[in-house]
Image 1 (cartoon, one colour):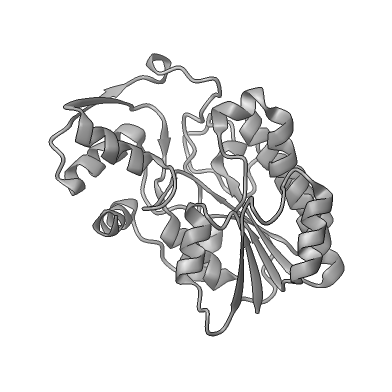
Image 2: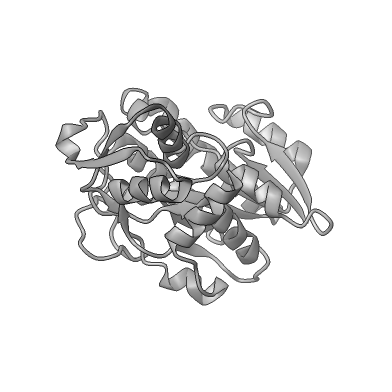
Length: 279
């Protein structure tokens, strides 16, 4: 199978390339240098040139706060570009897997969000990602949407890498303790995607994160513990760390639907230990 991975230099794109069976599949790794995600013509030309059997779209405008000020670019990247890819897949008999986010939900729940719960994004980033989901499914009803959250890896920019850097520089860190979610290893998500792409007849929306629940403070404490850092971590409230974009207070995702396809998912603490051992 010829597989196009967009956002190939990002966390998930890198892990997909690292974990894919290159003896069975031909990978086309594309990032900003290959085509312009804000330009439908550029996207279409690249897709016609490469003629993939599967597109895994990891590319996104993920700068949550910047999206508040630059919503038009975020919409082109997060909604219009995936729509163009999905329409091409529909016309050419290819498959598409679109990566989405917990930010499509309001964060006002107190129990895990199921794939059937009504989205209610509270930020420009969340709104454009939700628009992308809807446009993809409208263009290609056989597409797969996988929502994830709190993604980290040894690659790119993420919370875990930021904490490791700050812990090496400081004696004390203050971290938000009242936002709740599930930390997710990009490697684990990549392996889940690679399992799902081998299955026939799979379509629709799925949720994937590692098992377990944590606050950002809990995650920072675990990072300090597993990395051997002596940095003191203190919890603060969201209002003590204001940001332009509103973050979901609770965005734990129900993974029962995807576990029917791929089996058990490991706990975030186990995945974090593994990632830090490879960092």
